[in-house]
Image 1 (tube, one colour):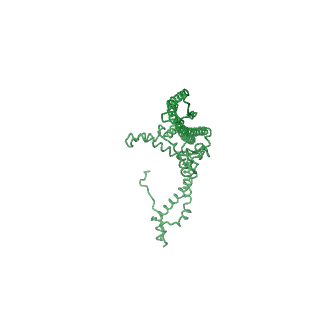
Image 2 (cartoon, helix red, strand yellow):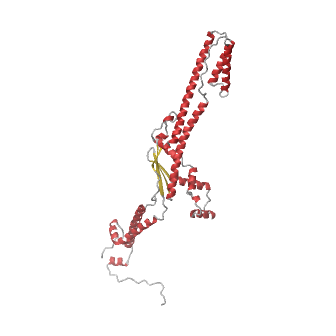
Image 3 (cartoon, one colour):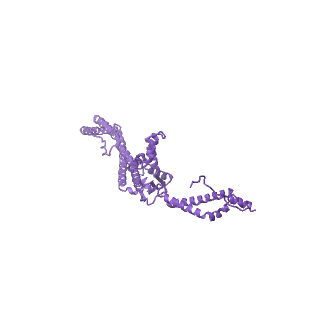
Length: 396
């Protein structure tokens, strides 16, 4: 009596499976690969358009305003600041504008099967009614997730957009680029404008440079009329200055002192030279204070002119701060699905799936008692197989 075939299955039996079921394995693999390639025509496609943007360091610094805007070094902080300036463009208002302009939001697509199915489920009470604000928030988040921003280095960033329509993908990518550039220019202009307004406010609290007051000279006792004329001029200047400035303004205080001096000199025209010495010292002090005010006013005026030059330069040379290393191009091929990748998946599924199926078939055939196996195991001849009759025989 011969030994029966081992019902278990071992890895050494794989070559035997190939030789026995090679046609079935080949057909399964070819059909699975073909179906996977054909599925690429029906799987929802995703297209991507992108651009590469560089933000130069000069965007953060200008030699004309270096006293106000500190310099920034190329570091992780600079990288984070650039990325934050790009991401701040993705406001809810901008996302909503894109969603409505290109009909990206799901709520903007009427008579959709999914929306009708959802409405039907809500009508039957199977689904809870959704808050419109919640739907809008989910659509914004979905649109934001389609926008990819990642850094290539500290100054260069890759910005892309993914969508199912290649035309809309390219248009949205261009809109994003235009919005980013406009936002960066607005931020820089706002920073310089705020500094300019602060300087103008400071200059408003100071007096413009005026011709220095005539020196307080001692007049002879016989020249009382000239002292009165000078006193009248001083009081006219005081009326003009007090209409614009307070009594604590340096020029107003200077003229008040001068007025008191002239009044005293007018009443005491016969005063000695020793009595006039303190007045000369006070005049020297007032002249020094006026000189400091004029220096501050002149310095702030120069800085204001520098800022005006910087603003005018920014408007004329905006492209000096940015560079587009790669422009958005029309997506010629979908990002997903990839025919090659799906074909590989189909091949693997067909090959290993068919191999697994024939291995199961072989295992169950070995572990089941058949007439041929019993006859072989007992060493007796097989006389034949019993015929299978149908349960019902026709009368014909």
